[in-house]
Length: 141
Image 1 (cartoon, rainbow, N blue to C red):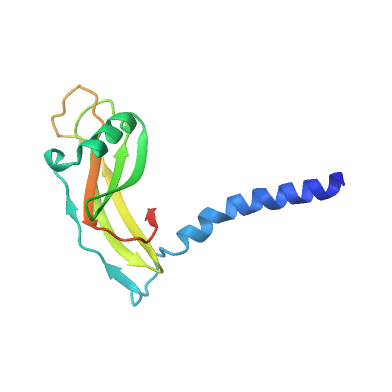
Image 2: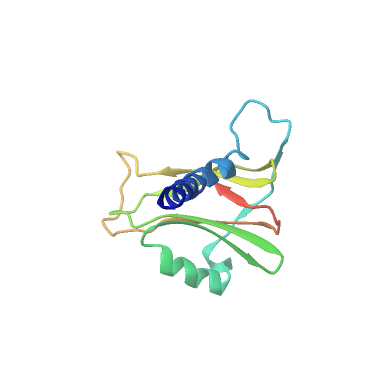
């Protein structure tokens, strides 16, 4: 009886470990772009962020985060770097595409360059993208 329970427990652990692998398998970076569809999006200015989403971002921005939010026929993709010691940090979009049934968002974080004047005030950079609502799952790469 104990042996069966251990085996089931191990299978459960393996299943939990493999789920992210299967989710990421939909967004390959291979050379074959035949099944890849580029998605249109816009970067949302802070003044245009829906109030409820703004509240969620304020609650989460001290730590690194990634989230999705839907409102009024739009899908919002949000990623944040968490609190940084100074200003001068930013996030840029490398690619946003649909592949194998998943929306894939590739971003790049950038810190201040060596010769850039930055404020000594801590910052919490984040990026908000808006696209027409889609039902596919989102994978942040």
